[in-house]
Length: 243
Image 1: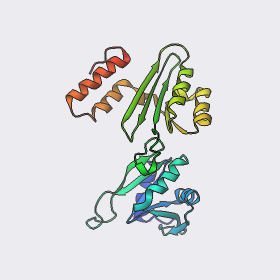
Image 2: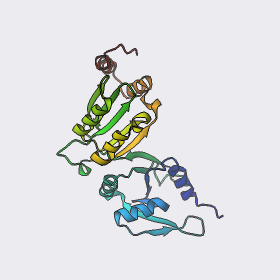
Image 3: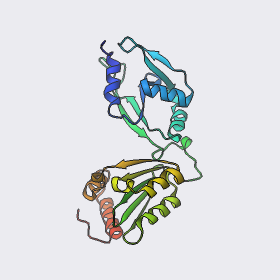
Image 4: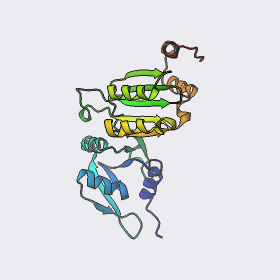
């Protein structure tokens, strides 16, 4: 088998880390897509599917969009349930030695859109997080375009009914959920059929309280803001949370 070109080797090294996303790979003034990503994008965006020499006998299927007008294409893909990984040139091509360094700088999903031209400004665009056990549940709704956050929980009664009620009220565009929650058929059916949105199963370890606190604290530089967050935790969980 012929060896891949250096640029395509770089592409595959990056792509393997984002198998569930369409990779927008920056080449000069365009974002290019290759192979299966190109076939999907060409169909969804009505783009001409071409080819590029990749070092092998067969040319790599390819299509692309201008970077200065990429938002409209990304919005269309995201609205149809796709994730888009934006891979940028992270060094100046004029000073680069060999292949220009590239890396994914952002993954765009239905619940993480921040561009105003990709949003309906008449309503919030919530990303929902659902954590369910056999005894209780917790929910969080965030609009990343505005920073608005809402938290909710239920410790007794019908947790599933509570989740369905809150999801219906906030009408999120995307849901992340723990494995146990995803095993409850009525919850998943509601997300898929009533909300008509995508969901992603998140590892139980990603809901660990200490891990999440450390992650949030890493983004808070001011000690007063950390103290405020700590107080909010105590009030919300009605229990002592140690730093």
